[in-house]
Length: 320
Image: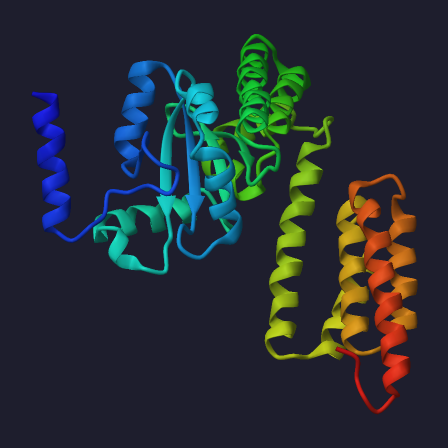
């Protein structure tokens, strides 16, 4: 009976002109709703691959180096239901229904680059995100096991929060969110109740979460306004806006570093390389131990190289 059902489904797909092939080979599905039901029935999580199967180089590498190999299939079969959400250039590969589903899910999970691999619980709530990782299938399975442990940390923190009150409850909930390291948009979409509980449990903001949240909102507003200057190619206006925003005192830490690094990029576009290099030093001085600070040295090296190239070409020939 099941075999006949599968043959009929394959025949239907063929008659409609759609391929049922998956970039990662057998064992994957395009049907997100069915995958969630299967995960719930089998007490598994979801591994969702957002991919561009016929154009994304890193997606193709991930399939060839990891997903298509038996050690990967064996390593995940008892833990995950595999879902491939494809965004190919050749739209004939997918039905219109699947294309619509994939577009909706890309927005819902705030996916902006490919490949993006999301780990979700059976309810569809994300608890980890990754992408291409070198090292082959065995190493990738080990990586997934580490990420899967984040769900246990999340659930344990939620359980502790349920027994606590006040700032202690808020701290446990914050620990749950921090463990997953998800983008703000994803947290807002899938864990709004947790954010509301944090605010309610800590009205005086003893944890500092409210301040941090407000800073993120301000930074999002900053980025929106900055994009307006970029759209008009108004470099002078963008520079003045960034400098004013940095001087406002509304931003600190890595957020402030990121803004000053943006200032350096603008100065570089204006061929003011000495000022751009000074801006990088200024950004690093805000917090020399931050993650962003570790990336600024490489950016500074690029600016110094660009300055040399500009000097070699002459002042009347802008550097590339």
